[in-house]
Length: 154
Length: 116
Image 1 (cartoon, helix red, strand yellow):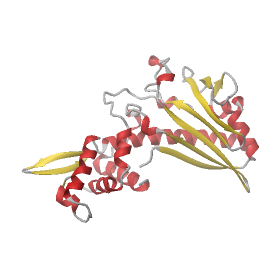
Image 2: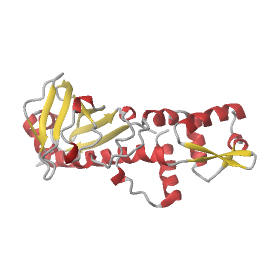
Image 3: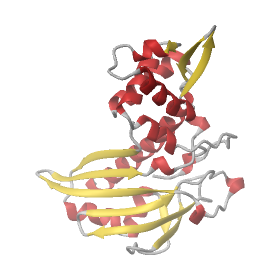
Image 4: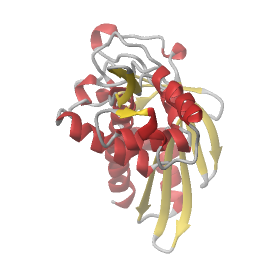
């Protein structure tokens, strides 16, 4: 059982290009869908507004951690209890956070990007999503899921 | 990744995730959970079977699992039997799966963005 998410993706673009897409706040905003107030600065709070249609009331907040050029970009961000419009704005500074890391590696065809998000073990259990508890396949189904999950990540 | 889907209905339970991860971060307990995944009820004797641990050691591990709500004790006559409650693990797993899916979508957009 793991408390982290890891993703590896091959990008057909040079490391320098990927680095810019990650750390230039305009470019980051394009693909992530957030309008950021200013550039990312290591050790500082980054603020912005989500631009995803219908969810523009959501704030973006993260504390930029490491910016090691073309190697590592990381930040911590909150996982609020609720992001329902009625509950907003929340005091995100009081919410528990996870650590997001983007690591870049040069490959023959471009860049290998490894994304990890860790620290889920520190989140309270109410950060779960009832809407996503769709595994109503009954007991057997749930057991199977859990068995697979625990066996996968001993 | 937009965080639009991080919304959820507030629930009454406020059990922290950490103990669930901690409880499962042990090989013996993990194998107990795997065993309990296969059926409804197990006695201590059945759970001790095939393990090199003593009945006492197994009981201790079961207690840890019980405290986190992963395992429930049910009485069958004079005997205690143990069964799995899939909820705590399922809850942790659902949230991880969800965040994971959000990242897949965001990384796909990043890929399109840098490769265009």
